[in-house]
Image 1 (cartoon, rainbow, N blue to C red):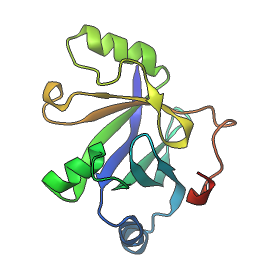
Image 2: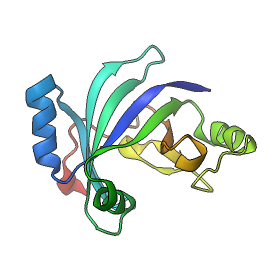
Image 3: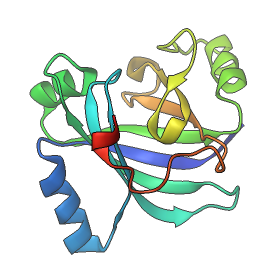
Length: 154
């Protein structure tokens, strides 16, 4: 069962400049940053609030590190802006299968590693009224990497 909006993914050309905009304009601070080689992005998670299910809601700022990454291709075609919405779930495997059974294309056969060691999959935007949708199961808080993880650690 989907429990919350986990995050809104925003594609950007310059991560540092975009982080500074959200810090200066809204007071949002970076909770976590990392380079995800598999996804081809450098990212920053800005924590917005805690949620009633023990999770949190974030803005995920995404800068492509390769032009051929999914975010790089999307940015070249669409420019900066909202890339996807992610819903939190306690069990991405079960929920993605249930959604697949309803005729929605799930883009990964098996969930993959996402930000902060979460498990993720995506739903095809053509099956979700034009919205790229991500399903996220957060890592156990005790197993999560420390906040403000340095990108150089990767």
